[in-house]
Length: 201
Ligand SMILES: [Zn+2]
Image 1: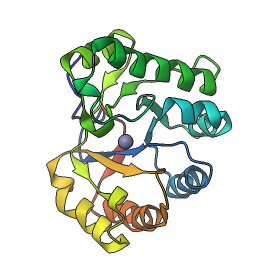
Image 2 (image 1 turned 60 degrees about the vertical axis):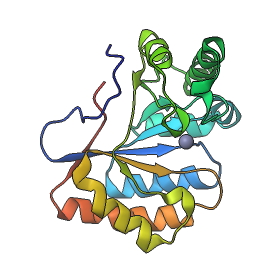
Image 3 (image 1 turned 90 degrees about the vertical axis):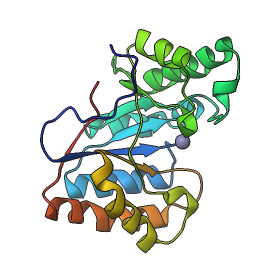
Image 4 (image 1 turned 180 degrees about the horizontal axis):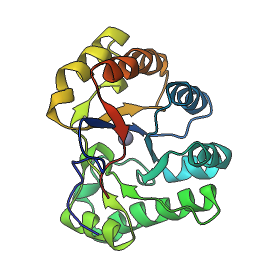
């Protein structure tokens, strides 16, 4: 597996990869899953290890609905690239173990996304050596700032030409703006002729 950060989609043509970070969350993840199901869109969920351990039924639901799992570390330390290699390895591998245990049935975590994009060459190597493709993004909805639904939608529309992977969040506080923005964005993407796929592994 490549240690390079995945910036592509595994499907050819005009597609986007919806990625949803920082969960699972007992309030917002079910709402996001419901929206994705109604929209017939598959996504990649980048999960925090302890949250996966706390809400295993949500992890199983994500998998059962056909979405993919991504390791988003144990503690979401956006400065983990400044920490020793042993710390980076445990942040990645402990979270992988918790997410895979929560998913059960031999389900594998397919990607690793460093919190805040704080990758290092070492962390990319560790992730790839354990079956997880490092995963980046090109379209930052900036939903985490809660700038208002219209602004989140506009951010996606403006940046979607930059690349296929779009970043949203289903945890970290009130995500009603994210949900409303996704309700608008997914049909708009379809109208523009985009399909939905997964990041290249
Ligand atoms: Zn995050």
